[in-house]
Length: 372
Length: 248
Image (tube, rainbow over all chains, first blue to last red; front, side, top):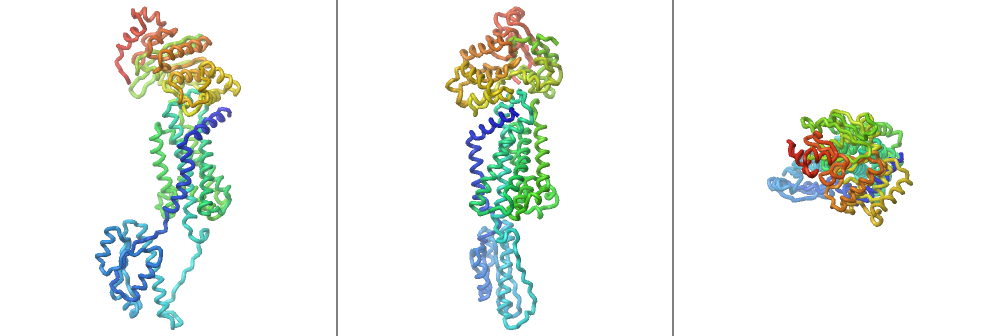
């Protein structure tokens, strides 16, 4: 055990002597947590809308006013030429074209039904989809208002309407940040852990000190533990910084016990660090290690359920996420922070990630060769 | 197996694919001698040395180092040898004191032993003003002397030195060889590679590798007589000229 203590002493000295690592440890959580949740927002605002109004009636005015009164839409132009509207779309100056036919008001009054036409710029699929959906909702509301206006006198509506009233459990205000920040924190802990550990052993290979280690009687597991523990501690420090930022800046206080997060993170970090160490036993240069880790991280993060819901992924991708440690932590984070889940609720996640940790680290120890 | 032999190598071979880097070398190194391991660049010296240190698996052949079998007892061998690689490999971002503490600790020295070793080295290498400076700030000559001292920290039975004086000025080289003599005097077997032929003259015995084989092995005096050469340099050139493969 003395050898391990000596190794740890050396690793910690090196880590805290490296200004680049210190900067990463403190700057990365701050920048990522301050910038990303504000920028990576699902809520689409400022949809550029061009209205082609062939009707120019009071009802069409009312509809347009209702739409542009929301913060979601910004009117680009109010015109009576569809061609003109399309050039806006072509120049990417408009995301949506709403065309109101000339007989809009007449039809609405006389026949009790009217048609509007909506053209979407589908280059930005998310914007087009959400913009279309918002617009449909607003038009639906407008429809209701018109109906109420017309049907004030009769007690019974000719058409029954179903009113949906929804309650959002666990995130009552549908606050997007409450949902995103815990996920981003997971990504942060994962990236720092995986990159730092992957680069570390490879650095010793590059500068040649690993040869000097390999001629000593040090045991392989001691060496790997000596590399693992410092980054495990760093990962937990970053998690702590992240939790403090999400409390101080976003007012996010986990509904569940913070220690549940720490217990899971402690096991999870072992898995992530094991992966980093495994990468470093394969790579010979820091460049190789960096590219390999980057490749793995991209896949794990994009298929981790942070930006896109796992439930809507195709079957094969859903199967893959079962082998993706990142997806477990993101789920656990959201469970604990939003729902207040306890250790018992996340026990399966914990066991699975523990299994990852055992497999990845054993593989790393096995693949680390003192002799080539 | 002879008890007088610190290193005993028989038919040791290393192949990388179709390339035979070390071709069935056989030799013994006596306990306490300074053994010069010479050869042109690419002759296979470093590969052979890496096998003897347990850094590289032999393709075939036998070797006994400090009484232990190279295949079965590689980890026991490691307790008994010191190694100084061609590439400077102390931690540049640690101080001299910290490097000594690290390697001493790894070899199982106690805090007390480490402290007395540090004091001895500081005194011996005149590092009083540098001992708490980062190693990267040291000039090359001192780095090499420090590496050697660190390789000798745990009193190994054998020390392997791979071109320890490459790029070092003549005064420091002389000092370095004084250190080698001191180590040999205390009973450590020294296995050293070099390209400086004056250094070859300092060795008790010298082997010269050509194309992965040991082509000559004897005392410098005998070699010069055999090859009818005035200096080791001449011996080396005569042998190296036969080489078919050049620099890697």
